[in-house]
Length: 143
Image 1 (cartoon, rainbow, N blue to C red):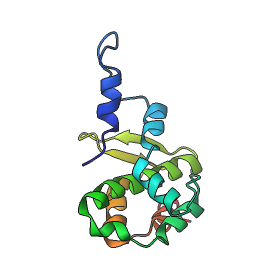
Image 2 (cartoon, rainbow, N blue to C red):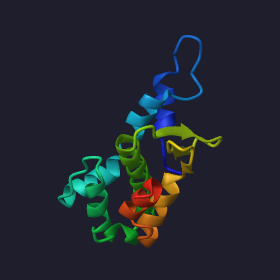
Image 3 (cartoon, rainbow, N blue to C red):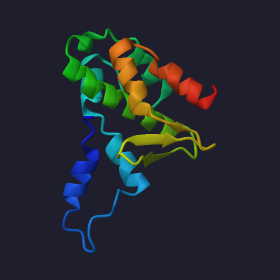
Image 4 (tube, helix red, strand yellow):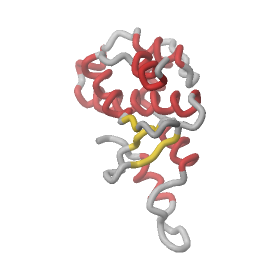
């Protein structure tokens, strides 16, 4: 799937006393998932400042999708876009947390218990342009 944060985390904790915990604690996971390196590079090159706010999602939606010419870039960018959407939700909607499903796929859990597969949303955005990231945020927050 192209999300290597968990492998990197496990490698850093390979010599942890008592063995490797099954997954990082939620705040550590949130920090790792917020990295979104490829998306941040694309945004920076395009003059978009990713400040973990809804406005930055709108600005990403307005970028010309030149990455669609390269399926590998689209794959990674889709992951990053979804993780960034999840990061914005977690930082802007109190009570929102990350969790990993049984396949180590990151999900956002909203305060009411609703789970979002944000990487699936990000992939759809990167490949098809829909749903727009800002619209996905509004739908998730009923805003």
